[in-house]
Length: 86
Image (cartoon, rainbow, N blue to C red; front, side, top):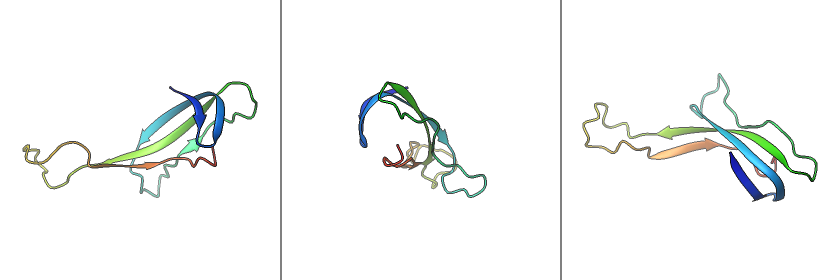
């Protein structure tokens, strides 16, 4: 759980609880989209629950993992909700 004092959209009284799903971000069916599961309409503290989607991209040149290529992800693709939505 991440605690937030302010967001890019302005000050916030509460917490942000984000869950990240690892899926292929380009798939069409089934659809994997980020979402906001709660709303914080009052000025009192609340927990904003969100879901993001990530996919790691690895070097595909070494299929046998002989150690000649790095094994860490080269990039991470992500789908997030916009700050206007939050």
